[in-house]
Image 1 (cartoon, rainbow, N blue to C red):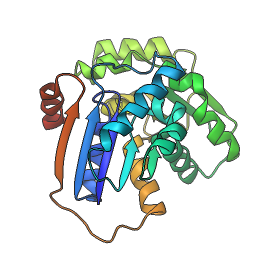
Image 2 (image 1 turned 30 degrees about the horizontal axis):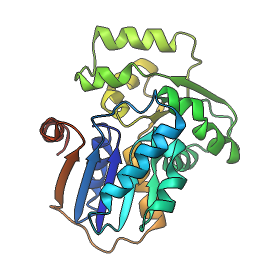
Image 3 (image 1 turned 90 degrees about the horizontal axis):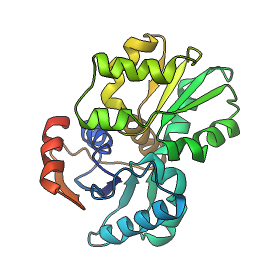
Length: 246
């Protein structure tokens, strides 16, 4: 099994980490569009164009599947990617919605959705959760978290100031959807802020849960081959991968 993982930058490495931990694939090919990150502030047509270009890149490999780690692309361009690709294309938004539904028995649970401006404006998570009977939703665009994570600021006064800025008027949530693949890296800080009684929904874990439900994996791969590509400065991407991945 060979999979391509696409993200607008480096955040999708958190999804790769989950794939590695569950040993699902023999080969993982990661492509980060680091030259044009962030996607979360771009318009829909631009996001779709970049996403289709990513599919064209992956056609250089014989893939069994493409995982779209970027929530913004999953919200805006999944259908267009599926029409252009010759293999299944799986997005993190659908997986995140299903993981949230599976984790929460109470339809009245208070769910907070975090993401980039584009992801939040798409209302993709709200639409999916509403269709499953969840209506008690809050959504917050928290774009400042992305550069903080990329600066390796995972805790401390600066991050706490960002929490105060974004969450001062937020009702205490039962669950928080980490609707950007950068956000799992500040999971511990978010748990400290909201408390242990707040469930965090992680895109990487959600994707694994979705894959294992929808597909049959007959083998475990303890040492998969990893290949990293970037539209700009691939060495920087590889350096980050060495820090983030097991």
